[in-house]
Amino acid sequence: MVELKGVIPALTTPFKEDRSLDLAALRRLNDIVLEDGVDGVLVAGCSGETWALDDNERLAIFEATVDQTAGRAPVIGGCGDIFANRVIDKVRLAERAGCDAVMITAPPYIMPTQDDIYAFFKEIIAASAMPIMVYNHPKRTGVALSVDLMDRLADEPTIVALKESSKDWNQLSQFIRRCRDRLNVLGGYIGLTGLAALSEGAVGYVDSSTSVLGPLSPKFFRAATTGDLDTARAIQIQITKLRPGFDATGTFPAGIKAALDILGRPSGWPRDPVKPVTPEGRAIMREVLIDAGILESEEERKRA
Image (cartoon, rainbow, N blue to C red):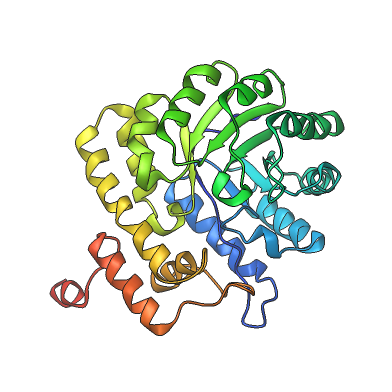
């Protein structure tokens, strides 16, 4: 069974100006983050505008990522949906493409009970042996997974990991203490809880800022997990400065795509209804990147 741990970027999905898939750009971005030193890649998640993809596009993304990664790291495919049968269809696409694992949220929008969510996952588990990373993201789904529910799901052999993105420190801490003997707990929002989560026992993180941070993200993880706390704390400050820039420059993930483009990394356009970042927003994002120490200012380039 695949082990999901370390630094796993949630990749954006590049679209061309006509909003068609840009698989060549996705392949380049995939290679870039692998060269940065990441430990896995996630595609077609929230950062990948999963809501905007049809099944043919999802399969194409899965296949291109698996092919380009070529066994260098695990590939996780986003397969969330409201109905279990639709999730199962997406999981089969991930299986067909050769993904190593899938990521699944609670059913979004309808706000089901914890028992409903348990039955939802049990139906998916019964239909496929694919390793599953459960994704707790109440901001997107409208419902938070309880510690008791994850305790039950952790007994399922194919539930191998949890991505915890509730922004609730107490919840994250309890997940780690209750479930770490049976699944890997990974943090989200590393600018908020990164160092604390790793200190508490999270085995890694899945985060959209990693593709922007570049080699700094793996450096942060190695420092945090080898006792180099001075380095980890310094990088944590840099990471923390990014999120306000993402939030201030457009609808998620437009700000991330703008940051990637400014840094010369493949990004592409967002897909409707998400609009590209305005020139004014790009100027803000550029200053955020400079302030975070990720991009050189014009003065620094002239001095170099």
